[in-house]
Every structure is written in C-alpha cells, then in structure tokens.
Image (cartoon, rainbow, N blue to C red; front, side, top):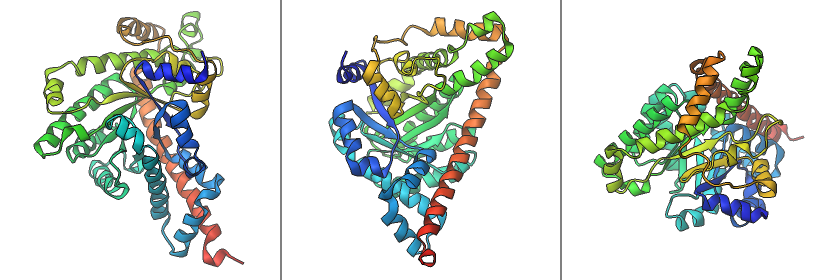
Length: 375
C-alpha cells in the first residue's frame, strides 16, 4: 500500500490525523500546508517542549524576539506572544480544513500555563484570555484533566470555548472528563451559546502507560509478568473507548445532540513509540476506531506512510479482552491505581518542566537580542 493510500485509509477508517508538532518554521516554509495536502493531516497540537525547541533552532522568530526585547517585554509576556502568534498562523493554515469539515477538524491547540494545573479559577481566567487574544474559531484551549481542571473544563465550555482536555490517563478520570463536558454544554446551552460551534477532544495518553508498566513488570521479572509487556497501554485506551461508547449512548447525550452538540472525541496522545522493541506504528494501528483523533509526531506519521498498515477497527468490541489484560496485570502484582496516579502526577510535572524550559529558552533569546547586548 502506498504512503498516501495508507494515510488515506486511516482517515477513511474514521481516524483524524493530527500532527503533534508546531513551529513558525513549519508554517513559513509551507511544510504544514504540505502535510495537509499530501499527508491527510487535519489538525495540530503543541506543547511547551515543542515551542522551546522551535524558538532556539529557528531564525523565524528572530524579528519577533528582537521587537519583544526592544520594548523590554517580560519573559512570560514574550512566551505568550510567541506561542499565540504561532497558533494564530497555524489556525489560518487550517482554516480551509475547518471549513470543509464543518468545524470538526482543522483544529489547533494552545494550552494554559501548566503551573495553573491545580488552580481552577486561574485556569478558567487564562483560558478565556487566550480564547479572546487568539481570536480564531478553530482554536482549542488545552486544560489538564486534574481534579481542579475538571471544573475549569466545564466553565470554559459553558462560556463557549472549545477545549482539548489533556493529560487523561485513567478510564475513571476519563468518565469524569466526559461528565464535565456534558455539564459544560448544558450550561452553554443555558447561557445561549450555539452548541454546534463548541468542539472538544479528550487527550488520552498512551505510550507513557507502557513505559511505566513495563518498568514494573521487568522489576517483578517472572515469566508471567514479562509476557505482559507492551499490553497495558493499548488495553487502557480500548477500555477508554468502551467508556466513550457507553457515555455517548445515554439520554443525557442524546438531549445535547438534539440541541446541536457534537461529541467530545477521544484523542490518542503520546503515540510515539518509546520502546524500540515495539513496532513504530503500534499506537496507531492498534487503536484504529471510528470517531477518534490520533495526534502523532512526524516520525510516526512518516513511518505509517512508509510501512504502516490499516487493518480496520481494532478497538470496538475489545473491552472484555482488555479488561482481562488488566486483571492479569493485577494478578502478577501491578498496582494499576498507583500507576495511573504516578502518570498523572508526572504528567503535570513534565508540563511544568517544559514550561520552565520554554521560559529559559525565550529569556536567553531576549538577552541575546536586547539593545544593551549589542556590541
């Protein structure tokens, strides 16, 4: 199967292909537009690590950084202006996709400051500010699925803001995310917002589950434990999809749908393979299902185009088998509740560290170009 055929087949199977990478260079070079026309990419996500790498490795930011330095912008303000500009440019590149898909795809995500992950009101305030300043209908604001984030998710949706819920690891938390989504849309309807214009995805993180569980299985070291390596992440995502099918078959959802609402789609995030022993397309080909998004790094996208296969729906009807995998993991000594707690905590910490890295990178760039730095 040719590369275009593989990616086209994935799209036809109901999977929206989003790129997990964004930079000014991608936009300015035409690379992002090319991925849309040649690689069936219909959306993009960003994060602070991606932005930090982009800023330090590209000339495309030089003029903006120089202007920011000239007016002595703070590091926080500079970070926001740089990232907002990138997201605005990407939203414009995807505007055609947004129009042709009637607003389903063509989406670009920008996250609130991850340091606010445990502060509901501050998250909600910043989500509203970013929504206003970016001023693009195909924007999504990323809000983490912490306990405090759930209320902010509901509040943002109630204000008519499209939301990408990030850092979802457990099925239980995912059910809480869907409940927050329903509550947000119900409030939005009461507030007079047209529901058809509000979009949402729930970013369920995949590969990190295998990384954590495999480490514990190897520490246990028994034959039964080692035989379960590489199975937890896919089983967890498949159980999440079963929960999605259940929640979106309820009367509560039916009433929202009748009012024009669109479902909050499951989004498979962290789909780059961390273990080289696994197929490099594992978290794409094993998680094909109708109505999902897969946001993937470019190397995963290219691997799929080069040698990937699209075997059809690999998720629907697998809940029982996936639960058995979880039961077997528990039987060999894996504390899954602890795994999921660790993953959420580390997820927030990694986003915090990435944000700090982005701030340090921008601070260094500002210092290099500040007027008093010129000899």
